[in-house]
Image (tube, helix red, strand yellow):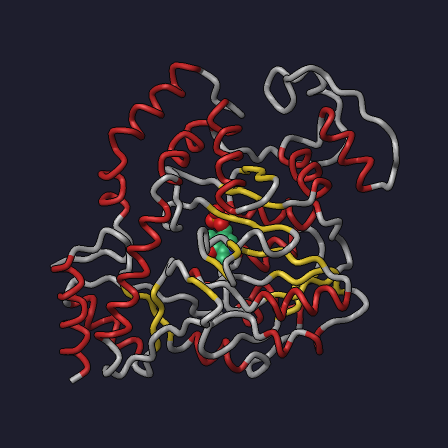
Length: 396
Ligand SMILES: *Cc1c(COP(=O)(O)O)cnc(C)c1O
């Protein structure tokens, strides 16, 4: 039996009819940039997460970059984050001229260790960027308390965690700002690249909105005023804000970006958003089944903290013989994925930061041991039985 790590075709089948219709409507509307589906999706997503604003962008990496800039972070600043993540987390911090300062992770949750954050705070520290890795929220109470004590912003990298909860609050609604990715393999994936920023802070929302469209128009002017502490009224034009027809389009106030969510992607995401709770629940059921059935194998299973409700973007286990395990599983047709083989502080590109092996012992230990097995919502009973039986067989 062949089982992929993620089966995007199986998921597409479940929404095919609606997606075809929605995409075809966008095509004939010819409203490809910032069309109605974008506005509607932003409203629906903000409501789903429980925030005042959702600002869609071209991808999750841009969401992080714009969120950092909207928090006023830039050249010379430091941002505390985890070394055990996808590169985009650290990359976004470096891209805006700030320095990522890595804090080791917890051995059981794989998330940033709040107990090790304070010792890394300096006069230059401006923000903490926790990542809700593999779909499980980081320990947000502890992180928010530290941020409050030192007056830092908190930017949640929730790229893998759409719909996950911490003490009843959704990821992306806890920090000052949250960032999501709609890359196809995320829990809520579109048919290409996409991303979104969530916040209840009006100023962060205004600046992010301006930055995604060349810092132009009314939003650009408002954002300029906010970033430069200028208190003056901005004249508004009727109705056309942020569209291709915006009459103020050619008046620029900031060096921004062109990073918007395509209307076609928004139309698909609106359909998928109505299924996300159901899909996440299936992932949790699959995880629960693995927790039960794999507990007596040699694998170390993922650990969930009581305060949180993970959405298991990945089900990441640990093995002392990872290479052997994944090769044997591949021989039996079961695909796995290694997340993440090289922690950020040991990446070649960060040589200049001066970290050496041994600086983040937990992340380095995990980097040699972790791998993901299939957990996608459409896994059939036969596929699940086959995965469990195969792992048990290999272990004997
Ligand atoms: C996927 C991901 C991103 C980046 O999202 P893109 O849409 O691929 O740019 C950022 N952070 C984490 C933790 C991710 O998993």
